[in-house]
Length: 414
Image (tube, rainbow, N blue to C red; front, side, top):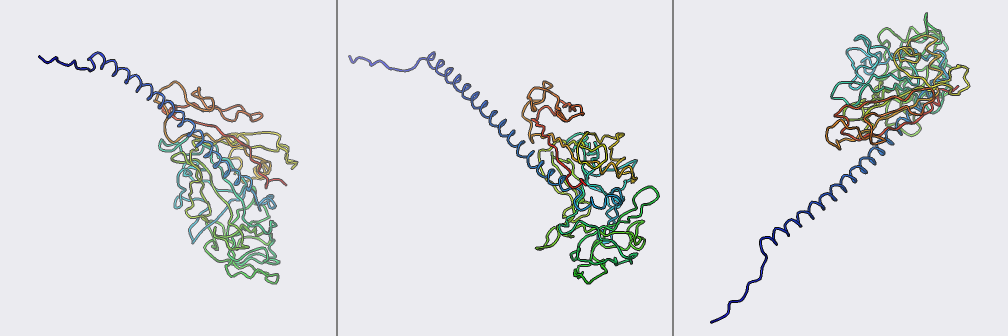
């Protein structure tokens, strides 16, 4: 009889032990990979916040440093003047119900449903004026109103030699102006309570800019004989023309850059937006940087008003304060002096990741410390108490970073 060979193999118990060991190893590998992915996402999101914050601050630094360029020489009679402007016969300023501003600036300077006037100033902080609807990022962000000329050749206002005609300004010469440049007409004679209204117009594109011409013809998309309640013919011989710069962003070699009359604020999708009040840029509303959840700002002022250009106090722009937007745009000599006192702007940006990184709990929001459900900004500004931003339960699922800097308003020093 043949002997049966023994068969080798695994028993059921051995198979179960092997399966258990493989499961333990798989779980361990998954935990390591999950931890590694979490670390990668944290580092990546932190790096993205840094990059987005640097981009936003670069733009703000450029705009605020340039604020007031070409305007400070006429500050005694232009700061606080109500600006009238039109493009292709459509009134741009003052803002009307026919030309409303888009979000997030729809409510800027809104008071009881009536649009207030935009007045000439290097920089104005409109505190807590960002849109607060649920679809818009942020909560009561500030809005910045920034104004500067684009004229690089001359910063001296041109005096009129006689009262203007409806479409021409009599000047000693027109060499300062390039063909098609935008200009601001302002009266040096004050009104009953402050500076008189000023008006944006445009030099004729065929203007001859030699030393012989003594009349600047007005024509073009930004020219109108009258806008609202203001007309060119009603300016007196004591008026001036200030070259604002070119009327287009596509400037030729040697031509003036366009003026910058703009609003800056936080809108949908954690985005920093700018809006061109004069419509030189197309489109007027442009996204500038992402990842910006909120923006808050303070003024650094020379409270003595003696022009020594030293910041001796930091002040808020909150409603009811001395430097509130309402007080700065009152159109009075006192308001003009407050505008002259501004020497710097301190900006705090709250940056936020685009995607949530943790379950919706109430245990705390990841921020610059990684443990608190409150963010703090204005933490190192002399005389200003640190400001808290308490996060909702949903907001705590995102990662945040607070970035702050102080930017001088160098063109408001005189």
